[in-house]
Length: 152
Length: 333
Image (cartoon, rainbow over all chains, first blue to last red; front, side):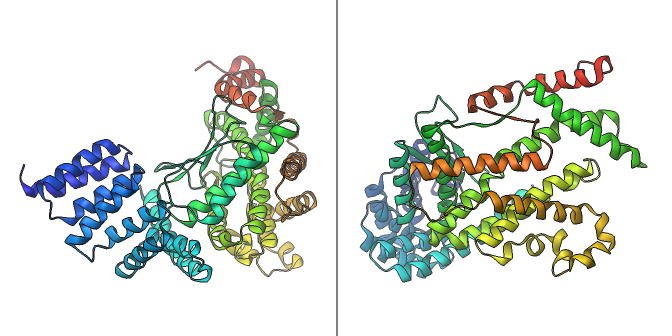
């Protein structure tokens, strides 16, 4: 299969994740990574599927691989933060969340995870700010989802 | 607790506390098609479940998700405490209560139809009777618990207040929009009572939370014209004839009922006894609202299984009631 197929494979895998068919998604991510190992997107998205499957340590490894290929991959930082927070490694998770929110200030999940990490490391006031930012973005997403629903 | 999603510390504690209090297990599930308020599948309603499941929309990823969990957990505590301390019941219906209810709706509809130039086709009128009955059943089974759950969350989970306000504003608008497209079809009395219930709930929450933005006269476009008006002024305008004005008048009365029944210490320590008492408060409030709407005989308090069985039989109940009212004029479909 040619490398040009990778975007299509990643899209199909993403659909499987949405349908909670994680095994099928994982198989496609493996295929995409085999075809194009230097594409950080495949590693980062596979990390996302592994988080859903509660395989957090493996997800961190995939994120690290994506970040080796592109140190400014905001989704990979956000997923790393999420996986590390689930492993209760809140200090490195906070560092990853800070990188994620710096690279992409519109990632509601990254702000939320940042809030959790700040709270867990005893920085409640900063946590409040992160939660407020996360809520603001989540509300915008919710309003958009509502408009899409009404428009359908 | 079983979940693979990130949760804030207070929410994790709240879930764990709920599990301890009720000696039960809670699972969290994300589903794209879940309703905005989430869904609670609980062991007190569904006897075949071995744990409680809270389902929320997949696009709720942060505090919106936390609020849905807090809301459903609080409701679960009320249900669980009732089940453990004296019996958990819900409003259900039987062939007799369906007959009572839809007969009343029919009589009211006839009065309205007599005043209309453009009459509603008979088949539409008949179809509306049970739809309206079930709408009220659904609303009255949910509405009284909403201020109870929200007031409790407001006083116990400070970090969720902004989220709560957003969700309540959204709910308030959505509930007020309910039936709007049927305003010309539904008998005025039921349109008004439906709006009044939500008006009273929002007003109560606006005062209790306290959040001016939640006031129906601020949040609901159709109610805005009643803001800052004196009673005298309201009585002398053309608005007195509109359904929205009438909703405000009835809603103010329902607010008085709510305030009388919801005199509760919202910040009290969480015990089974406390939540058992909240359940009784909810039951009393429900009964008072039903009495005010003269719908006391429309429904009966029964075990949740009774309602699940009734839902299965709903079409049969409807047909039987229509036959009882109209006799042979009704043909089997």
